[in-house]
Length: 356
Image (cartoon, rainbow, N blue to C red; front, top):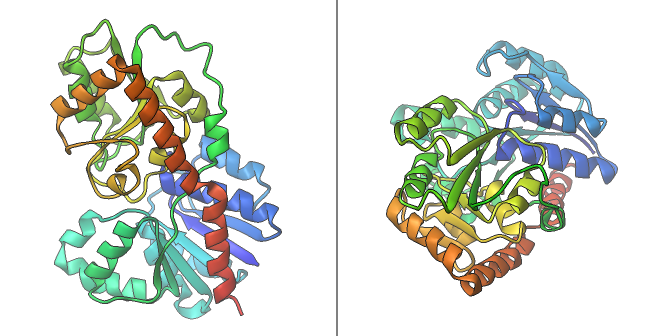
């Protein structure tokens, strides 16, 4: 099959990583898979994508992801593919518009359980029009599927769920980084600095723990990074909170830390959630949609925004070796249910069912 993935950019994020991984694996299975990127800024993910040998169409270099000119550019590209697969909001809209005259098979992935657009009733008819253009809408968690069906007001047969997946073995077998000096119990959070993330609650939790015993590593970049840096300074935690930026060696970073945390306001099905569980470290997460679905009964959940509860969990994992080992083992067993090959097989099956 000839498959085209369409996404806003290849900055840090779960959708971006999914596109890179699914492109790489589907190409090894004999499919022609190429990618359209609205913002073609060079990033580590962009470099990894080019290493697959796929064709990358960059519609701009650092420009807006909401330019109507992309509709006309997409029309020229998508006519050469059997399946066109969009990710994130602007590609969802523009692929739907571009395909109105091309009549290709189009599918999309819904990467979150909700979004701010759904709180504005003016968007609802636009969303309904857009989603109705797609032959298949793939949600990354059961909660995301349930919420989307409720929002659209009907039990659409075109909506299905394929869980995100990661290369579990690669994360579990990764080696710690020798050049990371570590003298304290390290908590790491790998996430873009976006409004849906909640690094501040984790920072508040660190502020409740002894400074000579605990350290926080924050991996990622994003539009809220400066705000979070300023928050760390107001708390006087500059020596205990380390910002590592974007990393291509996340698996090694996770193995160097002692515990993995995801503090968030909401998620779809977080790849960082599964990666953290794959690392052989205990995983702790906010009790919110998307994170709850994967973590409950395996890792440890804390009430959304409750820094005191989170600090108590971190302290228990630090103090109780038997509890630490029990949670780490349960997390790894859970991660095995989300292996990347299961995810790719799910997408491949959807494509094959749609292509004549």
